[in-house]
Length: 119
Image: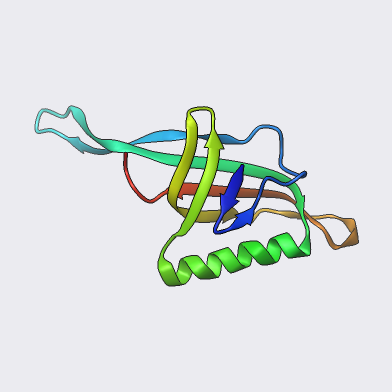
């Protein structure tokens, strides 16, 4: 289940290899001796979902989510993962390197969600 801002994105055009999990965030700095140190701040949820194509309605839903994100700063998400269900607020990013296909469809959509809160 992929629910972003109340819209279901578990679509039939979802590629069979969505990537999601927690990425480590850290602050990196150099010491006086020249060594590089990392202070781990925590882990943040990140998911990447690729779609073969999206219909005009689905593109409209994405644009609506982006508009919501502009006003509130984030959108709500509920994503089922192998580790359980992630529920929380996320930042939504769309990879805009789509390719136009015949019949007015745009293909190769990639949606990236990144969790607001560190775990």
